[in-house]
Length: 534
View 1 (cartoon, rainbow, N blue to C red):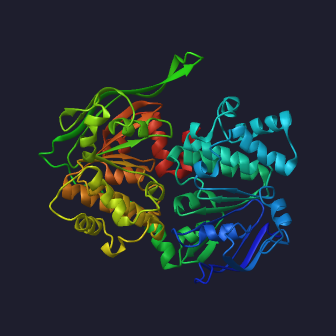
View 2: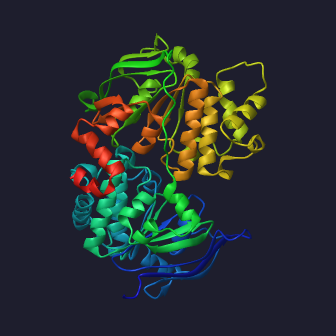
View 3: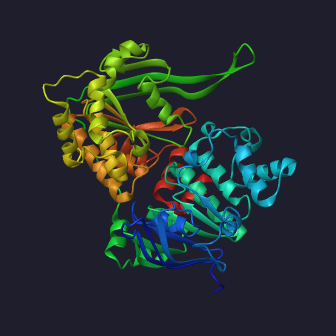
């Protein structure tokens, strides 16, 4: 085999005087091959990847070797690093919304890389950008160049990140959880895109992920990391068919399973929507006349009972979160919305506010939704003060009780969000919602950013809380396995329309339309996902 593009030997990393977070890690990446580093959050995957190109903070102490085609990257001069980073070695990060500049258009951001590394500007740069956009599968790229990141869907933003990474034809691509927050069909498309581009360009790829299903599909070799060490490595088929380490077997067995408790026989409707329509006007000209509409949701109808979970699935831009925002009365909509028999569709903010404690939401990213300046106690108890809830107990005791209910130690209540793992932060977010004793909980991708083992724990927690309090859930997710584990009924949305609905087993076992079958193929049969999406 030819010399490796990247050779890492005995790499160790620590921050300040703390213990090593990466210990004696060694691996190689050759041209045209994909090496996956897998493990749970905190295992050292991303730190390892970032250290190979000296992108860690100044307080990082790094020992060992990281050679790129003979250039020692550790301790290299900034001139050498600038020449290699973004040119010979490119990165794709997990969350494109935080990686892209919200103040600059897509064209300007891709053009910046071309100007910096290849001195390409003007019309030549625009031609190259359009070529890249077409290569990564962005429809009508000419119309997207003047768009800002917030105007694109999650899949489109990730495609832009891939276009930026490929702009300078790198030899090595480092992809750090590039598909974690994407819908299953978009995820399948992005993985197929990366594999196809790798074959055509002859790149090496270092792929960081916690999802072994992705690894099985895309990787040639696998390194399994636990607590900063590579505990097992080898060819992908060998690792999957004959894992040697207990931790590898644990990862392979992880994932949400089981079913929710049966619906109570006397369950009453908590929320119902009929002919829900959300159209956003397009206004142009000096007089801002309405010239058209963005039809986000068309005539969605459903009912959620006590103790019942309604799952909503579909690709980015299908209208899932828009439905949730309308239910929460955070955006305007047409059609009827009834909360425990009361029509809330036309209520103004003043009349809606007392009812908000009955509908709470848990977001996808717990770190982004929790204030970094507030302690856990302050975060969880905040809603009690906002809604002026009197329970006869001190707020401190209520926080203690709810922390215990979600499986956290009350002694942690004086800590801040950054001191917790992703799974713990999501439990805090659930506690913040649950302390108000809502009747309906909107769960917007609450497990998508979590490791498989933690994901399973959160699903178990949500099922326990639902059964104990007869909670109704509106569950939005792109992970169909989690939807099946938690939901009683499911709505499948595409381009603002509910294209299929019914009991979860009925829809999953016997999907009626090609789009639903496409979703199932992407989620359950990765080998046929390419055929399904083409």
